[in-house]
Length: 181
Figure 1 (cartoon, rainbow, N blue to C red):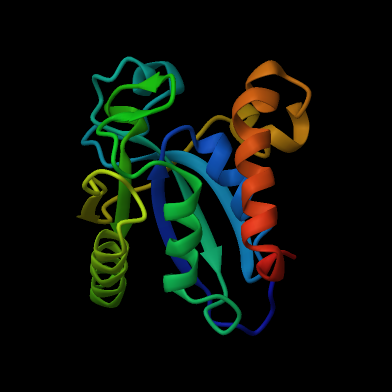
Figure 2: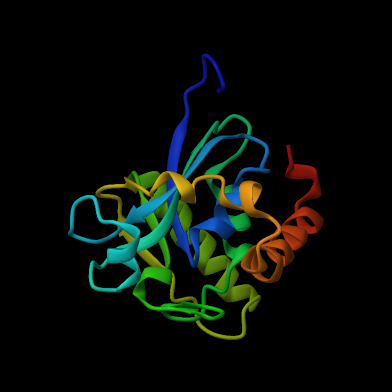
């Protein structure tokens, strides 16, 4: 853990939390990444409950980062390059509100940066469709079960990891080589 630094928190949903966790684990300035659930009214949901789509929660990662090493803007640029923010409630074969693209901002500054980045990406036409990323005030984060933490690192040979996560991680490593730990 980074000592004597003012750390900030970002909470992001971009499909399966295993994908985002694997990417943010390698990003310079990131102190900690935890997989969990956010955005729904039910307190402390289980994975099975969230997978049902009935809780209103999204699979999210909570990223603790050092803003003197990594700006929230740069964190979001990685986020928007790591999933498709134009597909409503879906990332690839993962379908349902639990896989929605979402930014749960922790303060007004994060909200403003997120609005700016979304506008810039939309104007640049990077994605063929409209950005549907939900921008919502952060309310609560519920950490996922232990077996979801560091999933890719512990299970990189599993088929889902090889077919879905590994290509996203390879793209991140290529596109953001200078920002890797």
